[in-house]
Length: 262
Image (cartoon, rainbow, N blue to C red; front, top):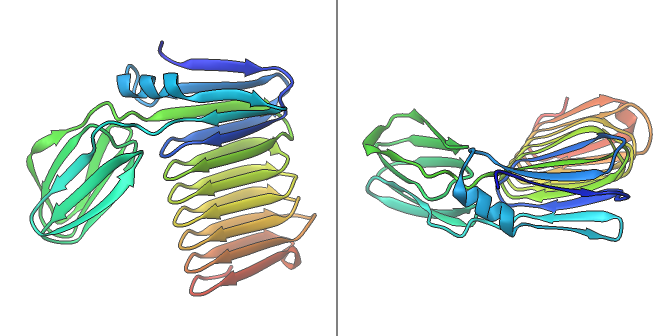
């Protein structure tokens, strides 16, 4: 099995949950709802195991997709000093360094990263390690397949969609009905939304090409861009993220503590 595809004729909505996987929702189809799960890295056995264990089922007229977290080992960054711990895709990511360390990790699993230096930033996405800042690598970098899964979902136009993830990106193309989208650090990009929208993120950026059904957008530090050409009011709130409003400004209520409003 290199991927998994399931089709649901008659379904009119989707509810998908992941931890750190990219979710792509296409609401341009006139055909049946189709769910495809593909490894980020071809042949990645960890990803294939997660795909096999994923729950994909029909509940009423809504397709429910739940991709389980990876249960394998974590990634360790070692220097000498302060230790901090976070969780990415169900793995413990332990950081030990003599100076500030920034970690931005998607699909991290089964690898070991050895880093020394101060003011170190390490980013790991889809099997690639990139690093910036004042740093030196130790003996080397060994990265497993990653376990990352791409979630590709095609549903009929104007279908209702719900998507939840921790650090994976949520990308929507086409015209959707009601939308609920939630992420901690992943970006949320929506195309056209005709129903009410509820969008929440902590540090991920939010962009909505066209929102006419009203709703709420809430972010802590992520930037928000929303275009409301007409329709129902939209409430946008951030703590430190910037807010860009396009279209009918009188329909867009904005509140921020320290972010800029454009």
